[in-house]
Image (cartoon, rainbow, N blue to C red):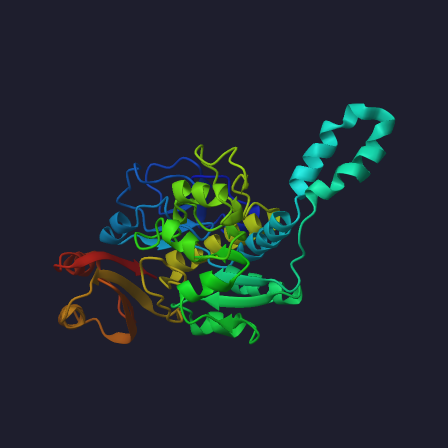
Length: 389
């Protein structure tokens, strides 16, 4: 029986996929087989020897020690695209809010509640202070055209905007989701110079941290509206405060509030609501649970951030060996030779690699003894192996 530990509240839509006959689910386990979480920070958490997989019900995995997991042969999953619609809708809302001073207007109306019969006349007199611009006809720049970015770009076209996108790592699958009317920028700098609105959808990496700084703001059109629902660290807060002060940036909306930008004119800070819809939480929990279940029961991997995608149909009459190892020459030969020496005939197999890590699924009709499994584990460079019957 597999033990699944939940480190955050996970939607029942996901957890209900685990059968009671094969799984135990609890928030406290000493040696879980799998962990499902949302935003719980695992970096200081001790990883048990029995831990096989971690599934993040969401896209970002900054809260998980990826490198440590890889070295221990622990597969880390995320749920790309499961919360995309929720984030997209908040991006669209942010575009409207940045264009029309709706928040300022609402706050002002509430401030005159004690004016009695004068409220109506005051509203008509002062409403021009909160006038704004329409989105139709404006140019939107979308940096990062994955699941969220593509949705934003497509819907912005429907609003009558001109849309230009930039993504040097655009996948074929993502390209299929993107409207042909989205213009392709020749480079990031080119995009920044021409757009009225900018929305960012890239991961936070060493190479992207603070990439939107004084140098980038200087390239932009005066009064640009910037929306960042990706990661707070992508923006240099000191520089954007200066850009807001001198009017270079007209409005900055972020889903990642920090003390140094709160109360700054032109900043609208949202309390990390990007994926905070019931539908999104259900979708993420379901995808994470299915990824975990598929791996534990068949060894198949999809949507892992540290292991390669690797899938082989599981046949009931076969035993399955899964092996994670350092991606070095001759490893497959060593493993298959060891199996042959122990009279284990390979019926089917697949090998995939990702950076320094390789993953193997080997199907056999022979029983794999504990002694053989120990021999595989003792091969230098093997990080994890398990038999699935």
